[in-house]
Length: 161
Image (cartoon, rainbow, N blue to C red; front, side):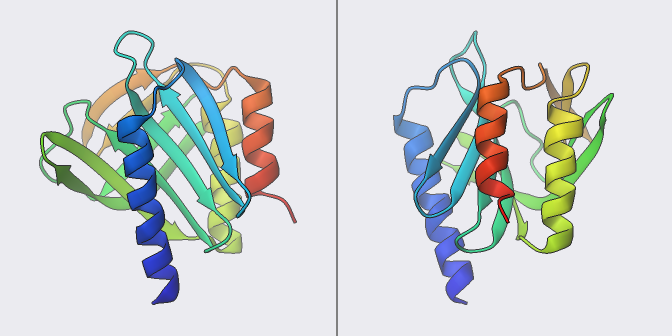
């Protein structure tokens, strides 16, 4: 119960930060002293952040969020795929006023961390664009993580021993 509340609180804080902060275009990693890392992609044209991969080591949770992008009314999974492979996380569509988001979260077990690490390295940093699909609906294609410094920062926090 404590982890669920902490995870929910973390999502609320992330939503508040997402709504109020200006975001640099492309891929950016942000971290905090609690052992949390957020790898986010912001669209250069709209200036809106629309994909965030999060690793909350302090509460053993990993997750992903997609904002906007003409999401379907109902969906229970987010799939990221590229020439490097596929990563899927279960979740749900949430509405906040005019914004529609997909929020997915799972416990940070050894298996889920291994899957996330493989996804970050193989899918997000691989060759070719990353296709984002919510439910059965393709919603965007974005470039792979090209900023090695950002990627290393995320990996060092999320996958430290």
